[in-house]
Length: 424
Image 1 (cartoon, rainbow, N blue to C red):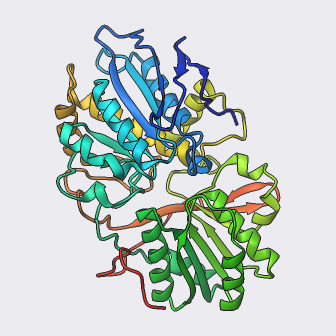
Image 2 (cartoon, rainbow, N blue to C red; image 1 turned 45 degrees about the vertical axis):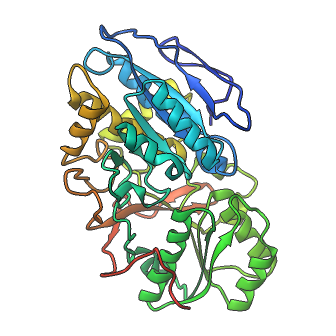
Image 3 (tube, rainbow, N blue to C red; image 1 turned 30 degrees about the horizontal axis):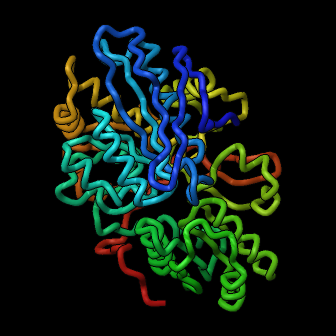
């Protein structure tokens, strides 16, 4: 797969993107040069803040290409209401400090909106709120997306905005279906969403009648050393495995388990679904494992949203047959898509304030069928979606195979919260 490199990249509109060199105090940035080809109005600046490098790079290293492909496709149609979109990409290097710097710089640069796809965006979210800047994107970093006063924030990926993080029944039912009886679940200690995801898997498993052998939320971000955890998994009799971690950590932990004689009956990965993984040297370890995706995969019958994605990624990101978006690319595409919708609905002279108003009045968004559920931003701030839905892919000798063309959905456990760990 062709990735966006920090350096020089040529986009479809003939724009040359140059990235500034990064340092310990400044996030690296990519800007488009402000072309307004095809539109009569002044260009509209929107920024992507992501973790292209650092410990989250295995998930978001290719994220800019999804953001840029969606914007390129829109600019090729004439932009938005006569305006071309001028994209800026900030790499926060998976640093909370640099995430704050990036948000402040984006505001200083005069962006109309920010697309967030970073596990550390929560560190600076308040600055976007205070400046009245709309934020769309990946709500998987923390709880700020549904907490007052952050009504400027709009998840584009069907994540819930209830800050208590209610627990869905999905994981536990899945483990039970495939013979799991004792779960090992793991997360990063410095990431709120990772901790909550780990707690949620444990509570879901308990609700389904499984035992939780290991619940570990102390893993250092990006770690690939798991000798101690593998021994603990063996001692606990783990036969079901999941991790709310980046794919490099999640795979390294499974390898360590295998080396210590632990071979789970069922393994579920929440990230990592990508064509590059299927051609990597760890693919043999993953045979028989399952991967979740909240966006419609390309290996089931295409709908209008996927058809548009294929065309855009092929033309603007260099995709070839067999390629499909990874987690970071998909999340960044969705964030850009929702921001573009807000710009379109804001009229001929979009401002941050009227984009927020336009998005908050949006009652039916599903990214043209890419999402498995329809989002209502008029009512969903601080609330849980009625259903948790997504697709599951099975890793096999020839690549990924969809378990079903229809997304699986589940309700949540009444009164549950993932912000506290269960007693095990």
